[in-house]
Length: 464
Image (tube, rainbow, N blue to C red; front, top):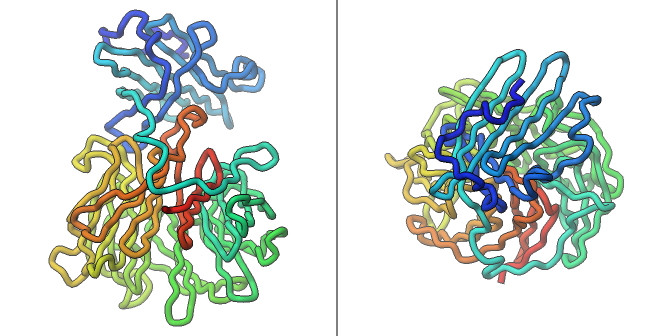
């Protein structure tokens, strides 16, 4: 099925032999959806094809997987097919260059359970936003371990150790010398998020699995060179947050449903479940959250950021205090900057909606104000790349901004956010071509910035 390149619908104005001008990076998106976009690197020739990581195995149907590309110089075509548990999956993609120097693209996805799904998209050229750095320098890095890249998704620090969570496990890295970080420990698995609790005697890592069928793991890292599992929490979590109050440390789980479980992790080796809040109103799944006292700010994906009060009891009777809708609510923060209470809402949805593409929304943060959760300003590098995570220090915001690297924003006047420094860690030539590349998380200690990069592992930067 779907083996005829000419059968995939494309516009009638494709430029004959236009693919000779195609090589380079492009942003290709179906703007009707939140996450149908990519940054492919087209290279090669009509003889070799344009797939970046093609091997001879791609053409061997014996293992149940096939991939091939085809082009006549005008139309590019690729087809991928495989079978899993008696279900056949086929993915087809075709593209051509149009007279306005854009790409016209069509995706066809088929499986024997759901049938055919077709989407059209457009693409434009994409490159690093600006020069390598301004106000920030590279101090050190650890990009590979035993020759294999570190695909880092999140990062935390405890003393002189960095903990990286990623596709290939959790890495424990000694950063006592920031110019020469070195791995000292490893824990297998595939992890999306991590938090570390140190009670003065024991050091414990809580790990959010990438597999939704796996529960949140509890890993003893007291001896950095010998991480080992000591249990699991009752629930899966996509991401985690910790709040310290009343001499306790509380761990909150974002579970991708309406529930927010809470654990007392003051004694981290023996976490105790202390309740479960329910996000009020319509819910599309809590991706992440921020906790400030009894207020929880839940990133409710396509239904926005929901602020609700749990002071009446950490359960199902929580009261919604405000809601802010943007493209795809990914991350949030609440606190005081320059003497003003603010809420920061991070958008990951690159769509042509009223949000104008992914950006940071700066909101009124006083729950007593009639304008609570109303937008007072935005900060955006460009619509084609999303915001992942950030940290606030004083009046400055340190953003891990995917393809646009680390961006430092002065919020001393919150209504007029001003970029004051940046570092472009994304390397166009090496990136695999996905929507989520580059800087995914940043932690600041002193004048050093510790960055989790999806392709480059750990980067240590210094703010000048």
